[in-house]
Image: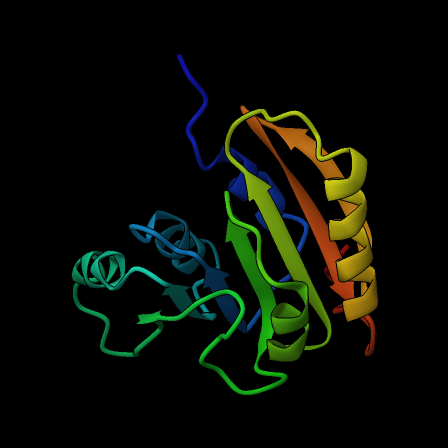
Length: 168
């Protein structure tokens, strides 16, 4: 039996403590955002995608949400429609978030989580080096990177305040 596509996200969720505010970038149909809402029942989840059709589709999947815990919005990774220092965790599943924008919307000490749901050759050469430099310039340090299920995940921490006690 094949490993569920979100198994790398499930494994990674164990490494980020108990975030209060989570942003998913390039949310598509909303599967990962809905998973995060179940995994972190006290957190508020916001998710963006540049495709307004995907946002409408994901929104239709939420159902009854009287507390407003989860919401989808149109937005691009390079221009996130949120104020500075709002989120504890930014998640990108099979997407490449803009490091500067992720750093802008994260609180000091917040986490950036990159998830790949299928095996891919690691970024190497010039492209990988450039991506690593962009993250470092934005203030991110690598915490952990590992294979999980059929994919992999990497956790990065934004410079600033100490991480929560229960986070890696």
